[in-house]
Amino acid sequence: MKELELLEKLQAVELTIADLSARIADIPLRLRQLEQDHEQAAGGLHAAEARLTASDKERRALEGEIADLKAKVSKYQDQSLQVKTNLEYQAIHKEIATAKAQIDAVETQILEHMFESDQLKARVKEERELAARLQAEIEAERKKVEAERQAIEGDLASAGAEREGQARELPPEVLRYYERIRDARGGHALARAEAELCSGCKMRIRPQHLAELKLGSELVQCEHCQRILLWKEPPAGANPSG
Image (cartoon, rainbow, N blue to C red; front, side, top):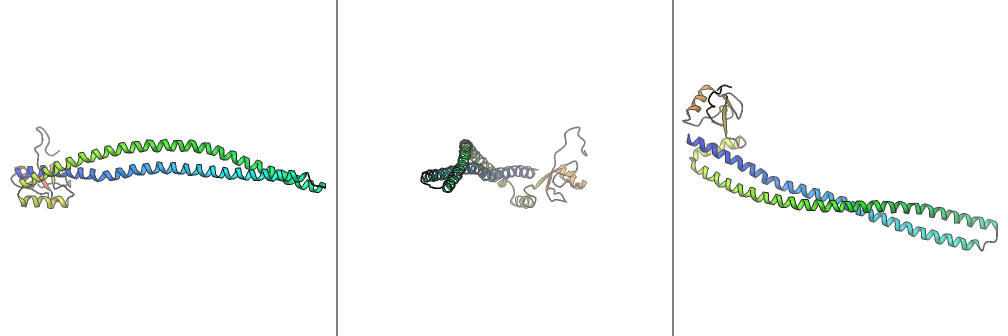
């Protein structure tokens, strides 16, 4: 039956269009994932740079603190030359010892910051290299995706034109009949009869309907899912009921 053949071709091209449309719709999601990967890499770089800046700032503050403590030690040492009693000397000596202990503690902190700074510089270098590599990969993938988009859009335009041509060959009432079932069945208006079962809903086809389908003189619907049934003769030697 010519109309059935046309409907089969129409469904095939419409399913192709649906697949191409889904691939087009997926492209913005893929591009967004690329952007998120880049943002994540940039975030790691910014965090490392911020910590390096903060560590260097803290180290400079500690260096200023040491300068103040050394000035205090020098002041106490000058005062120790002018004291007149042993008690005054002991008090100043205690202040000097306290200040020197503070200097030692601060110098330890400075060394820790210097060690941290070296580590952070290495990390910043790694993060910059990672960000640059990801950026290059993203740009390459973006070009690939855009080329893919253009190819899909070309295929989609061709499939759309093919669909329109096939639709024009069908009687309007048959086309409306097909479209009504297609819309109700998620794009699949046709189903094959396989081993006396409808491939769409897996329900058994009554012998009378199966006989009408084999005659091919009219469109036959599955009484369960309402899809238009297709019949294909099994290969020679095959078990029709298997």
